[in-house]
Length: 153
Image (tube, rainbow, N blue to C red; front, side, top):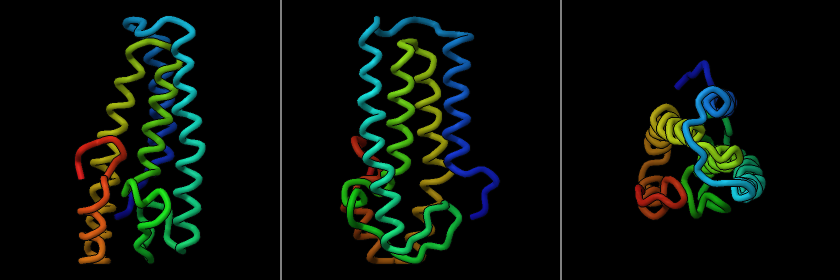
């Protein structure tokens, strides 16, 4: 699975699109000031989730890049509650940032990023893990949500 664009580049592009949409086409104000500052809570949570997920992968000797060979099935740490905590962290960060300006249009990008992460990265990565680790992966996948807060397993 070779990609020219990695998830970080998708995240940066999403941030640029969010800013552009808010500046060029804000549509409506969802919440008045100072309530948009609640978006900072999402960002604060991400500061815990993504480094924890990264550290857990590193400690297991597992690759972090989507096209890296899977050397270990990581099911501990934040991976006990989500099969994809780093993607969830990116979505949460975007949601936190989308809330800051208080307009509607940045939320479009959050939804599109979530769909793109799922279709471009998560499905392919999980197929690779299933092929590499077989029954242990399938058991883990059946007991652990793909994303935190979503009903899809």
